[in-house]
Image (tube, rainbow, N blue to C red; front, side, top):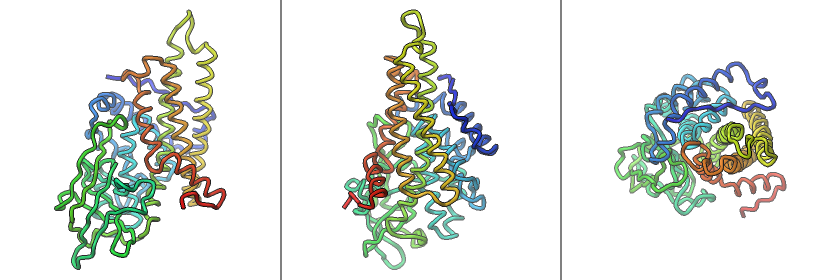
Length: 392
């Protein structure tokens, strides 16, 4: 069973910018990760199995819908609190953070923002407690970076809708109780629908043979003329802007989460460099190792302040989608680079399951692609600063 020796870096005293409540939330999440996730996560990753036994604990630390109002079962916390929780969870594992991120930003968020009062009361409290788990259906086999081209469709049959199509690369789908699915109506307008497990024609085959996010359940959503009750349509907003709002929330959480993965890799590499002796001195005494470690803490510190400021802007209602894209792209690339450099400091030991680095590295190869690829986010920034779209 792995021993958790993690020490969180805070080189520029970012803690001074956090409230006492923020610190309590962070410390509770950090302690839970050390107690419940670290001891089991390497085995779960080796076996490519999501540890469902942690769902209740994730709910208790506020990982599911921390920003959802208390009247709907959420914690009513601010956006920085949400980010901090995602950071601590991804310090444990990106796949576990993916589970929480999907539940919060891609399932609870659209029901809260676009759902009816009846839908909010029916689903949100159970999602917040983990009694229900959800997934988000946007990406399709033929449409990833271009979701507007989606082929999943639904027809109005009078007293119900008939949904047909398929979604791919869906986190949580193999065990999800509900799916928030985006599909086009007869006029080609995109709408969100709530699909429940057990509906005839709805299946969720699991995706196997992954080298990344192995402790996270990934699958498909198949809709073979599924009858959807009309009350399951999300009426509050339609068009591609609706799922993109959800993705903004998820990408914001990822920007925080990636820092957690980077911090864990840095903490491991720093500790190892001080303990590992070669040529009669610790390898931390060598210039090349100090260069690696110094660059790591510099990049982590920059990302910490970028994301903290983004959190402030989101709490003020001022953060733009382009700013969120920049933070997601920058922080995930930063974390992946740090994972790779950390692995080199550990040498051959870095590829083993005795340390978390290689698992983080493999996980981040997915994180840099999902919720908008690294290149697409770069073009979003380019479009924002030039006013010219490179997509069309």
